[in-house]
Amino acid sequence: MDEIKTPPAPATELIATSEIYPTAPDHAVPEPLPLSDFYSWHLPRKQWVRRKQWAATAEALMDAIVPLDRPFRYLGLPGTELLDLEVLAETCIKKNTRLKYIGFNSGAQSPGRKTTQQLAEQALIELDVIEQPSTVLVDDISTLGSATSIATRRIKEFESFDLVNLDFCDVFSGAKENPKHTAVKSIVEFQLNRRTQPWLMYLTTAIAPHALDGADLNEYRLLFERNTKDSEEFGRLLGAPELAAIPIGSGDPFLGAAGVRLGRLLTVGVGKWLLALLSQSKGWILELKSCVCYRRGLAGGDAESATSREPDLFSLVFGFRKNTDTISDPTGLARGSPASSRNWIELETKAAIQIATRTLKSIDLDATLETSEDLALQMLDESARMLRLRNYDEKLYREWVAGMPAGFAAPTAKKTRPR
Image (tube, rainbow, N blue to C red):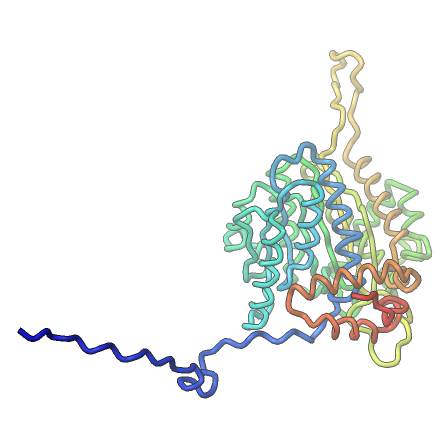
């Protein structure tokens, strides 16, 4: 019987990919090009705010909450690039604690911006300090003014917050029906009902006389007048040339105010308004821990220096802490007990004086960086590193900063450090 032979298998022919796809297929995903559009919050001065104002006060709070045997909790407006969250996460690493956050970003969610946010989130994850679940919601933080909003339901998943960062960058005391006061009031109420430890609120507001609401300013003025009736010192501070420049009660302190003077008046006004909220619980007290001002946006045209015009952004840090006070015994049965405890007016007046005093010492950040090359270069290098992780072109970024007037950049930003 003849043996049946199986014919050999044909040799496998390798087909080059180029023969299948002579050109790149339509569904191919190209490598994203480095980003080259830069914004005012990319400037070194904003990195100073993140590092020297925000991170520094957050670190001090971590030291005050001992032991901090849980994640540090954040509520805020981190934007698409999550730059402030990265700086805060680095601070948490330094203090050997973790970070848990919920953020709000109502900005445009184009595919490019989503990619940037994904890169930013990856940079945070690689720091290995983020506690889950942490998230940034595509929502407006002003919806916290509604008790039934999704935003309100989501923050209730947190016990409370150590840090609330309201980096509005537009006018806080704005046009009628402005929801910011309502949202902040809801946040303060949430915190007071759920918290006993101290906490911080960062508030960034623009100073734009044409956009301010007269009704808001009138309420601030009435709060000023009530304090001046109880405290000559507060009236003296508020009547200083650096603030109202007129005796309170003799006219409208906001009339004609602009730039730094207007910003300082608004700072005291916001502080007084927050104290008015706290007056209903009387268990908490307020302190202005930091007050920094700088110029809004990018310098235009032929300006040689950022300081050629008045600051129009104020970055404020308010600290809230429980009031530890002795209680009184009006009957006198408890011997050695005071007949009456300090009343709220006394505590509120002391806090108002502290706010006004700190406001008068506000820092002009652009002027500081204009005269401090090493500090400005340090902030430039930090910004460049963080933006590089978010797919920004570092070389173009440094060139962009070098083209800014002094104060927006380092005095000799063209002399960047070798990489």
